[in-house]
Each structure stands twice: as structure tokens, then as C-alpha cells.
Length: 360
Image (cartoon, rainbow, N blue to C red):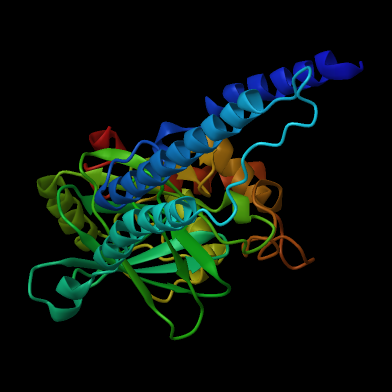
């Protein structure tokens, strides 16, 4: 395929592909559908940038086509040279001042909103009853410690709607980046004593999808999490339920009871906490049965949980659970029956009646 016809078809193909791909994705993972204060501010700045770019593009293209048509080569005017504008003070002043004005129009609100989004003084000064959550990024999951409330969770982060929730972010291993596109911007989490801060403010109830936005290892793209925004009354009830978890409660079903014993005997409890233990190496499993997904990516059902328990490396390569059991002669892999019973035990861990379904 040669000539401009071939190029036009290729351009049409790519344009159609771009339009098709633009319709893909989850609306809860889009910065173009803001549902929170931070995302709203960022969206407005993006629209301001787009408007300025479109304006500049239209003006430039208008001048381009005017010159192209007005000064095109004509018969009997092959040697015609248009009037030269070099040294024209008005024009030089015009194309110097206009970009400066556009830059100021873009820079002033950007700087203003950047300082606004970085304002976490209410949490620092304790001037108001602010909710503060310590967030720790790990390979490849997230841990949350609700300061002053003795509540610890992993993966699903519950927040109340209509108020700012302040986050103190760090990392337990390598650099990660906490990002909930539809609610707020992203913030890096760094290992060591370096602690970054931001806030979440969801306007309405919902389950908002989050991603790690910093390359952190083989399963970086699978390091998903959820923010569950519920009403303030439901959040208070959820926090109260989490504080009063009875870790000694006996599961109702015989299979889950045996699964609880296996959970101890297989030493799963050495890495995972149920309750408000801050020392867990792996994710806190207190409300595992209410989670939206397993490992952040699989639908939360028994079949997927058994797959995750028996073959974690196939689900999330490079995770820290791989090789912790069943890789030596002394360590017997989980049989189908054992994995089934442990799954029954974990899936019945539902300490609160406030669940992600309440946010939808």
C-alpha cells in the first residue's frame, strides 16, 4: 500500500484503535471521573491545561493554514516574496507576552492547589477530631493502622464520606506509591523514617479502586487495593466492630473449626494477624471474609482462595508467601482438603455487618 491512501488508512486504523481503547477500563479507577476532593482538584487543573493547549493549537493551526493558503505559489508569481516581519516589535511583543500570560494562568492555580492538597496541619496540630491512618506499602499489599482507634486492616481501607481522612505513608521494603485515581492524587511511600502525608476526601459512598503507581517488583501491576467509603455512622460502627473482634470465637461450621486449627498448626498465624496485632509480617486477615478481592486481584470466593493458598506464585509472582510452606521434605504442601478447610475458616471472618456492599 503506497501513497497518501495507504497513510490515511493507517491513520484511520490507529485513530479507531485509540477511540476503542479509550472506552476500556474501570470507572472506579479513572481520574476522569472524580469522586473526591483531591481528584476533583486535579481534574480541574487537567481541564484548564487542556483548554489552554487546545486554544494554542487552534491559533497555531489557524495561522498555519492562513499562511499556507495566502502565500501559496501561484502562476506568474513564482518569484513573489511576502513582506518580511522580522524585527516587527508588535509581533515580537505579542508572541512573548501571550505565552507568559498563559503560563501564569496555568501556574497560579496549580501552585495554589498543590499547597492545598499538601495541607495536613489539622491532623498534625490535632485542632480537630481528624481521622489519621498510618499506611505501609509492602510487596505486594497495603497495611493500615487507624491511629488512636486500635484498628488494623490490610488491603481494604474503610473511610467515612464527607470529611478528610489524613494518611501518613511509608514503606516496609521498597518504594511504592499509593494512588486512588477517582478520589485523590498519588503519594510515594519510602522505606525508612521518611514519612509522606496526604488526605482522602470521598464525596459519596462507593468502592474505589487503587493501584501502586511506583514499579516495585514482579507483581507491581497486581498490587491493587480498595478504598471503601461509607457514611460516617457506618464507619463508626465498623471501627467499633473491628475493635471488639473476638479472636477466640469458634467458627460455626465443623470445616471452619478444623481450618482454624490448621491455620495455627501450619504456622500461618506466624505471619498473619487476626485482630489488632501490629507485628504481622503478612496482611492482617481480621475482616478477610468481607474483602472485595483476594490478594487484591481475584474475586473473593472459595475456589480462588484455594488456588491462592496452594499456588501463590502463580497468582502473584514474587510475593512473600511463596516458599513459606511445602517446599521442603519437612513441610508438606497443603492438600486439597486442608486448603478447603482453611478457606472455610478465612471466609467466615466477618466481624462487622458494615461491608463493601453497604458502600455500593
